[in-house]
Amino acid sequence: MPHKINEAVCVGCGACMSSCPVEAITQDGDKCKVNESACVDCGACESACPTGAITA
Image 1 (tube, one colour):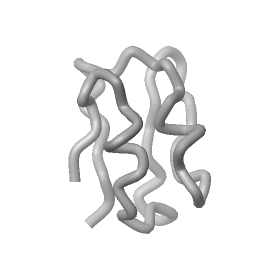
Image 2: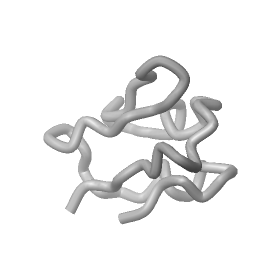
Image 3: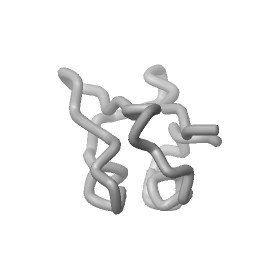
């Protein structure tokens, strides 16, 4: 199951984007979004997120 970003907690810092090995995360305005069809569920983004906005 792809990871999800809680937009209420996301600050749009981009740490998750730079950690994603398959570039499945993009910036959408001031928040980040996961492309669920591209996500390989590796967990790198969850580990990189400083606010804990990303969950499996």
